[in-house]
Length: 483
Image (cartoon, rainbow, N blue to C red; front, side, top):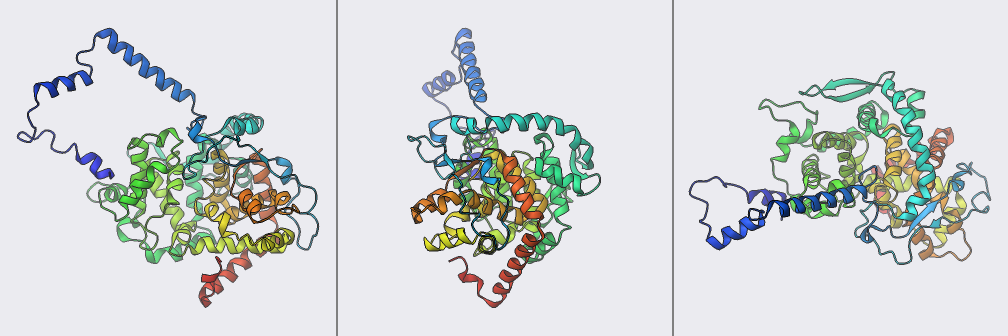
């Protein structure tokens, strides 16, 4: 059933001659189902039971809206990345032996009886995951409360909607050192939507943002090009609302994928509920943005994450900015050239700075596309806890796709004890790198990435690798790189 067919059943309910006559038995059955014949006490009892069930459900939801428990939501192959795994910094070029130094493998958090998740879209926490992160989460929450006031002074309102609600923000002093430092420490959740909006606007001014837009612009459809939030057209309807009313060739596939997209979140838990309808509308609208990208399944978790912080119209506008200025166009274009580029850059970094790991994976024929594809396609939304994903996205919106590449390298670095284990083989390495990764402390992971990204030699290596990849695209050699 499509979204359109769901609502079409209610059409013409007020038509004078279209309503069939109900028989007495059907009418009585309908009245019983709507509690018409229930006593006052019975009706009150049922209302109290329904309220109790709602309260129990809400009590099992974490601060981000995910259900905390449930046998169908247990993480399969969840592993703990202890902070000590990131104590050793990003290696220097030519340094030998660092990767082979004693490094314990990540700790398994999965129950022996845990069943795998369907489609890998649930982000709910098992008790083991909660316990592993409890100490760091407690510290982060305390620090977050202290940071809220600081962020309120860093952001200023730049635009309001028709109801005078603040919808557009910018940084008071631009992207300065203070903003960069505080983004990597984690944006307070209450300010995340405002900060993300400001960061998305800033990406348009960067070299990467302009390069991304130059690739996307020729393929943007006219009807979907004006993604300015809350700016009505001549008929008084916004671009998003206009697109929602249009048909898309991708609607059937989107409707099939929506219920499988982070269904462990209370907002997207109910089939054809408000959250699922909003997700459908955003994906439906974005499928008409670009004649090359259309719709890909990896767009679902990205749109769902945005809907946790934005209205559907604002989420659509954010996805348009990501498509145009954060290389999502290249990621989802035919052949996934953006994915191949990031895999190419990742390989160059490993061979230059972690040659022992690169050699071991070559020996066991473990190619990056076999484990890292989902990392880049979904921006880690199916591979790390939701709160960690948010921290990664904070940095990604600030510094672009190099952040995603370095997070991937960080995960490989954290598994050096597994990859270099003498008895390691193809299956053990691939299984380890296909796990659900739970950092003991997000600060340790983000600090490792930040320190690596600040190094001039790392920046130069990444830049040259991307230029080399583009040269291969021009020469026609890029098609074979994924293999």
